[in-house]
Length: 156
Image 1 (cartoon, rainbow, N blue to C red):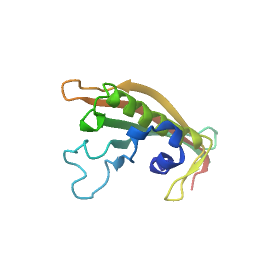
Image 2: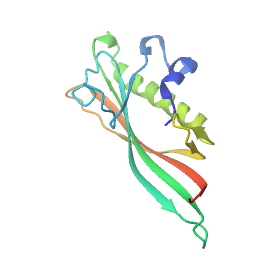
Image 3: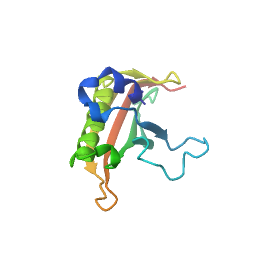
Image 4: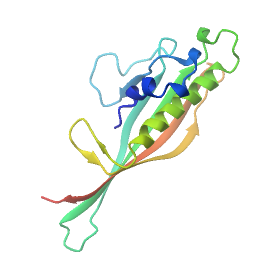
């Protein structure tokens, strides 16, 4: 996917002085130690992403090319904690800032992106967003659906 962490310093207009710091980006397929356990949100915010599905489409009658559609889920999480001071809307504002930066990073690559493994996406779309908050624990979060498309790949 798009390297979202680079955009946290490039697009400073989205982050106010109380909303500084890069979140941790976690790919659930990682085999690194301590990446699949509980996470302390008071030290850093977190963005978790994973691939949900892949769809193959053969648009010609000869089946010599295919289109691929990938669906991803992205979770953005932050917590309203001692960083807030007296600001009653810190958690909500921090979540909004993280969402805007994430959306900006994805939309800046929407017409094409080359991944670290050399594969290319022709289009990236930000889909639906849903809330996932827990007021008792002071957790704020969004769940985003992302769709990436690759067109006219030659079938070997």
